[in-house]
Figure (spheres, each protein chain N blue to C red):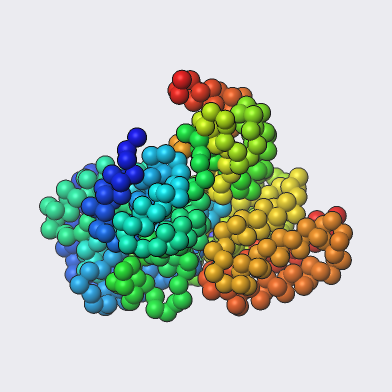
Length: 387
Length: 156
Ligand SMILES: Cc1cc2nc3c(=O)[nH]c(=O)nc-3n(C[C@H](O)[C@H](O)[C@H](O)COP(=O)(O)O)c2cc1C
Ligand code: SF4
């Protein structure tokens, strides 16, 4: 398995082209299958968490017929520790919109929506200004694609694509069963493509630089570069674009404060990597591609960390399915009981079993992923759970 | 203050007399007066021809659609782990002292409500909070005092 050093990349935040929406104009001179092929060839995977191949998704979407097809930019960014989409929307919104428009051209969609979390409502005025510039250019290029902003209302689970669609339809944000996937049956039953903010921005950069250049970044397992939201006990907090395929040890060397005890990779839905695994674990591998990395040093109580996560999950569970609704609450109560001594240490094993049951029986990624951080923290920091 | 009926009609004009108008209507009312009461919900239900229970069921799902009365300035302190590590507790304590209310309460003059929120996406700038839609970052007790004073003076 090949790995990479910690290498900064400068693709996603590179300066805009001089003529606005130039990448869109140039992409529209190619045939639609050519554009999709370029994205496929780049190996780009969705940056919203699940890591589905973007080119493949676009191809499915292009092949779905419909009189009205929707493209939704998922800007719900609610994963604790993630703030890269916000930075993209503030600093390079044009790239995000370009990505949406290129997808619209390539897949014959006419309606676009940016689903923006309520916490980011203060970004709306600037985004609207950029959308006006886009409208002007789309008209000039002969692209019929109108983008609106839909404001969320404070629910983490609405980042899940089908819950997002439910909420746009005026319902409670409860995830749907899949299949059918939004590509076939999405917003108001119409074919709908949902991609993350960073996915769209990166797609436009793949069109600018070409798949062959983009592919030179990263390793054969993980192509390209991606944004990392780095926070916690680090002297260099912020958003960094890094080449994929780094070992955690190199990452910690670069971003830790010299006393790093654990790194939470992929947000609270991801894994907590303890110091003894720094040498072997690779950032992004086997864990989600959201890019949230929280660094904890040895002064931090991992019990408090886990308690905070579970509190979050219990609150944000939509409550639709029992394993997740009850499970999140029981895990929280369970670690409290072990800490206070009302339950024996062995109870932690039962709790791990419960979290694994949630993984197989929950309806959506929220309930399914609780076990990732739960098991990795309880197993690696058992003493801290007890004393 | 804009009439509730006006907000409803305005959104219906844009979204149609359809269920898709529901969340924008609720958001419009919250923007106007920071919460949606039972009467408003009945009014919305009539306008969209759905049951009031359905409106309540949807509204109560979302943490930014309050259905109990809130103050003019709604403060939401981020309770995510990184903000907690950087001193959220001190910030919260300072807010409680400054406003003389507890978490979850609203001041008597109905100016401020003090709430917590999950991750605000400002983890590299914590501790952080929102006051209505504006973000405040790198907070500490001194800053809290200044910010609250600023809002007190605004509403005089
Ligand atoms: C609980 C939950 C929350 C999610 N939150 C987000 C989010 O905030 N932003 C996002 O882009 N994807 C989020 N996703 C993933 C989406 O369902 C979907 O996979 C993604 O938007 C697809 O875009 P991509 O292929 O570009 O990654 C979430 C998934 C789950 C299960
Ligand atoms: S797993 Fe949790 S969040 Fe997902 S549908 Fe079930 S209850 Fe809702």
